[in-house]
Length: 76
Image 1: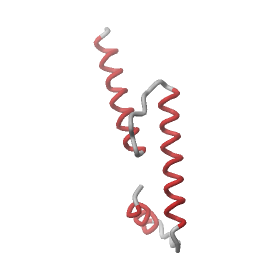
Image 2: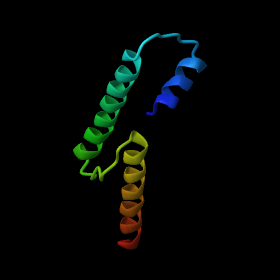
Image 3: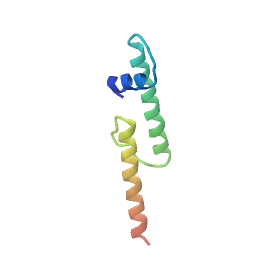
């Protein structure tokens, strides 16, 4: 999540915050969400790759699921 993303999110939701702390807080929240996605993937034996964002992790997961489906179809 970039600073511009945070600014857009705050503007879109009529949130007014003064100071730099909000940016640090948003980065912490985003990191925690990435960790949740990564933990879910690892619990189900999906590799997390080198994703820096939740979107990267989800793209990796989608690719691995597609690979698993292709493999299952070819084994029929």
